[in-house]
Structures are given as structure tokens and as C-alpha cells.
Length: 315
Image (tube, helix red, strand yellow):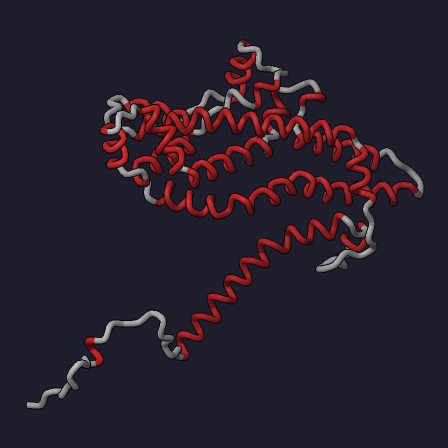
């Protein structure tokens, strides 16, 4: 029988803890897996970024070059005529103003309603919380439909009223469930016990302790609500008759239809120029409507990732 002889003060290799800072030698299989993962990530990034880049270069390129496939990575026949036509239209500016108002006011109301409601439904001492949550969830699967909604909004005086963009969608049940899950799983109950000992009631506990610890989920829900209001097209199409109250998405649709109408009614040599402007306007309005969201998202990205992982996965 043999035994390992150890030098005093030293341990065997099996007893030495693994050090994550020590770089392990990669095998051929490790290199193959790494290359595959990197290639997959590159393909996903290209698949996401290239369509946006193509819209950008197509909006400033010659329409014939776009139609014949000559525009791939760089613009051909650079021209800003489409953007000039878009921004010369007063409907763009009124649509932008309306959309900003609807999005900001609507998101503020959404947060004021959703966060307190989710906090209340997360408290175990609130006995009817399961019944209330069931009533909320029921609306996700069963709705009245377009005609009953129209009749309801008409009786409430919301037809052709800017409040139709804000009040009917004051709360999203899905966002409510996400926020409730966050409060249940991420806010320790010990904090409430400590706050109660210090004499804080529910309102003090909510405003002084819960809200400061909920910046991640607040940012996520605010982004969800803001994007929903910004991209809202159906509400203006059905419930608004006054063009001055239409949001940006509906105004862009009106501009596109107007340019298509001008294209069909134009004769002679001007049809080529009109067709070029119509296609540039088509790509231009895509950027005009999405650019603010693309600019906003990077500032909320870190909260977005953290909030989704905490509020959705654990719930």
C-alpha cells in the first residue's frame, strides 16, 4: 500500500480549491463550440440591424436603384427629397404633438393605476385579492368586441375625444401581473415588518420603501406602456373623426395615401419623379415613427433587462 507524501504546510492537488481566475486550456471541442456561438450571435445581430439599416439607406436612395436591387449596404443616388416632403407637411408636426401628449399622459396614468393595484394584490393580508385578480384576468380572455366598445365609448362621450387614447387602456392586466409578481418575489416581507415596528403604515411603506426599490420594474412597465401608446393606430382609425386629434401613426398613413393618390393621378414625365418621392416617403415615415423609440430604449436597457428577469421569470 502506498501513500502520498505531503510536504508540511502543503496540500495535495485534489485539496486545492478551483480558482476561476486561472485560464483553463481549451480543447478542440471548446473552440468549435465558441466559434459556433459567436457565428450565431453575429447572424442574429445582422438579422436585426440590417433591416433597419436598409430602410435608412433606401429612404435616401434612388427608387430605381432600390427596386433593381442595387441598394445593399450604401445609398445610391443620395437624395433627401422624401424627408423634405414629409416634414413640409403640417400633419407631421400636429401628429407628433398629439402622440407625445397621448404617450406621456397615458403612460403617467398607467403607472399611477398599475403600480398601486399590483402592490395591493401582492399583499397576503388582502383577503379578496385572488377574486379581484381573477376578475382582472377574465378580461384578458373575454372582451365585448368592437361594436359594444364603440357604443360604450359613445355613451361615455369618448368618441372624437382625445381621452379615448388614455382612459380605456388605463391598466394592462399583463403588466399588472408582472408588477404583482415582482412585489411578491423581490420585496422581502421583513421590510414590511421592520416598517410596521417603526410606525409606518401601508402608504408610508409603499412610498418610502417599496417604490425606491422598484426602479427596474417601473422602468420596464413605463417602456411597455409608452411604446403601446406611441404605436397606437387602431384607436385613432375607429374613434377619431377630427384630423387635428389624430396621432402620428394615423397622420403618416394619411400622408402615404395622399402620395399614392397623387401618383395614380399624375401623367407624363412627372410620374417618374412622383414615384421616386412616394417610395422615399414610404421609407421616411418608417424612420420618423420609430426613431424616438430607438433613441429612448438605450437609456432604459439596463432597467429593462433586470426588470423582465425579476418580474416575469420568478413570477
